[in-house]
Image (tube, rainbow, N blue to C red; front, top):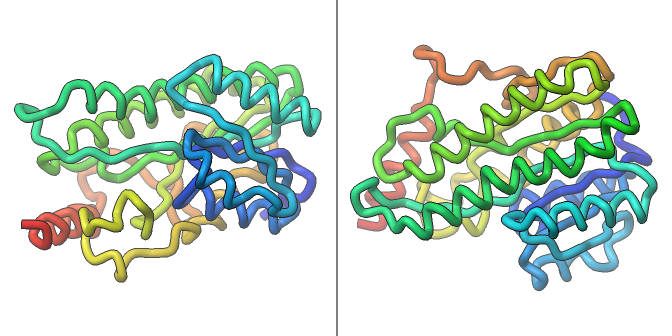
Length: 255
């Protein structure tokens, strides 16, 4: 694994959960982290942490995402890593879907991912280097009822990852996706995916984040990663028991 020291890392959704946890880890390892979120109270928890700069940004707004990336470059002179982590949850069957909530979820996950990639790639192409990491989910592979909004959004982010990698294969830029693991966050504290006490820490996949953020130019791109290894999406033999079982347990608990 390469060194992250001296690198500029921009993280969306860094006001809480996985985003905040990995922001702290990257900074502790010597990176300069630009933490963004709409959650200003959560971002305030990072104020004063050595190596972390914070800036408000709503990922559903192209102007705010672009401004956050411009801020990172203005402060550090570059952008080495951009992590699309911002997200919300929603559980409704298709026939009962709140269409406004569905639209909001997709604007956060899918539009936000696109905006972040577009803004970061503009600078990374000039530099001739960079890493983009998109946080997705194995829920995209399941036919679990009630999660059409979240699952379809994560599947769309998988497609953006692959296309972004292909479009930048000769630009010195690597675009990859990863699963953060089923973690204890505000999204899962209600037991929606099983007993929160049994879930992993928000930074449980930090080593995978760091590995992907420090890959050498010419390394793997357009791939999905889990536990530090490539994960083949949408294969019939994939074991999704932990995902579907956790969702089942969560629903039973709330029933």
